[in-house]
Length: 66
Image (tube, rainbow, N blue to C red; front, side, top):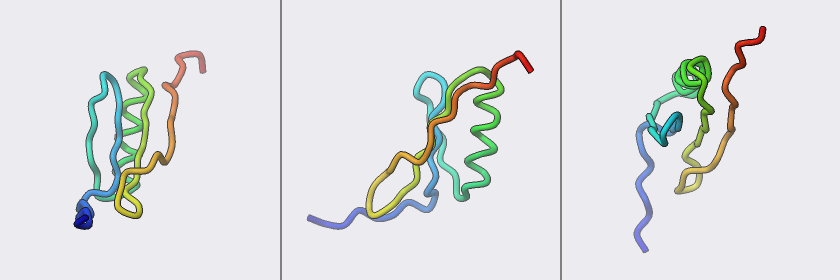
């Protein structure tokens, strides 16, 4: 079985309605997470490791009661 080539953008963020965006850095990924959670959706972050996407973290939406 041929090896899967690693993507150049190793951070993937899923937000509302299953939409995803890929990012080159963890910092850029978490900027997207900040936007998603401010808009009231949950964000899920994946990182490319050992030939596949691995769940890194799930972040719930920010609440308005602060």
